[in-house]
Length: 111
Image (cartoon, rainbow, N blue to C red):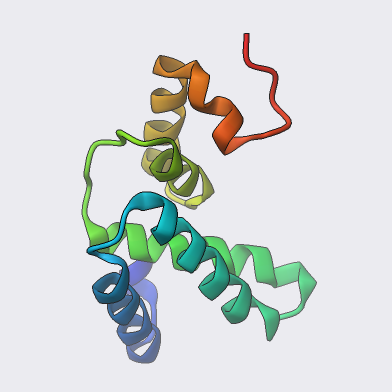
């Protein structure tokens, strides 16, 4: 788990975000996590910023718990995670609900 590998300060940051986004829907959670990830990664430079943002998303998802993916915006977050199980759950949702792939990947061709 990524969360367990974080220093106490970053764990507090992740916990604060979990508390803040917990009551929100998945679309809003995704927006706020994208903004937070971009901010956290900005100080690291372009080579590491994307990885840092994905690590933050992964840690937050770990703390939110393992709900079943039932929403395209949730699937998008799970696909952004560094955790293989998260990505598999997001992909499974999209395979079962191909009409939502366009929401997650606007460049994809939905048949």
